[in-house]
Image (tube, rainbow, N blue to C red; front, side, top):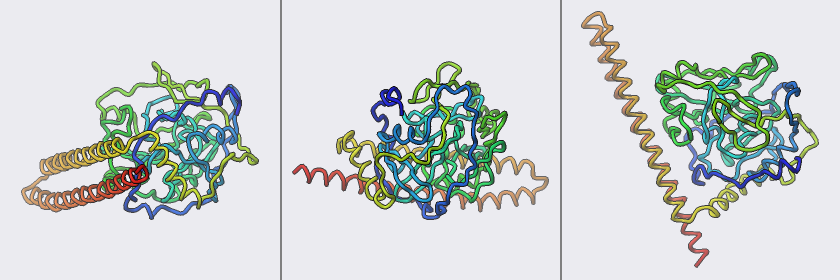
Length: 396
């Protein structure tokens, strides 16, 4: 990459979650990786002041993460200063632009992996990014319902077809792929603070509908996503329109006035390019967790780590309980409406009986969710305390 581009690299910014990994139920159900089948979309380069290839990606992202040789995808990247709880498309916000719903990342490096390429999942590494050449406002698919809005990173084996958009999804995404928030928070900043714990995902998936809504219009890739009017109703606020403007250099995307500045150069593949430092997949499974652990030790004292974990867990529990309460209120409202529409005493009695069964099932599921998150929190506390003790023993 050119010297002037490298010169503006800033220090790593945000520690979005503690380095603790307790697998979520269902993670083992993720499909095995398949070779990418994307048909290259050769965007017109006219009007773009900068042109890059994969070698530039390799150089730019190296200070922020680890490159791994991961068949069949080739070289993939995973961030180093995050925990396994971290998920793509969480540390930032959504804005409605001339390209549809556009992700504004608050990571310094976010202009690359949230707008080019795809994200995959590995049980040992967590989320990893597979480079791509096509710029998009966000490579995600959507779910929404009366209470919730959710999105999931599109995996590497989802085909993109020039002039059409994405093809049929190759499989149903595991529940833990999805990022859900209560719809009223959708236009907030720092959405990572409002993401529901994954123990809620199974129930929320059932109460939402799935639609990809990523298409091509006038040679522009549009992330239509959830209907703007519905967002307005759920958030009880006007949805502002922004224009995507060309950022002059790599770095964090910026919202200013009615514009969103994102660095989005034209990118070409470079089959001969290779990262300067690469880990093999098996080596990465062992070394990446330690790299992340070392990064956190540089930034947080043992006391700070325990405090950060407690604050994070308290927020998760608050979001879970709040969501469950709203779900119960919504259910009661729906039952009341059905009773009013019932034409006879017998029909009303039927509505009540069915509601009693459903209410019992919902309460049982809520209790199970709470038990699961409580158990996970206990395991996380053991992990963090164990690492704190080991660090103290080393000092002694």
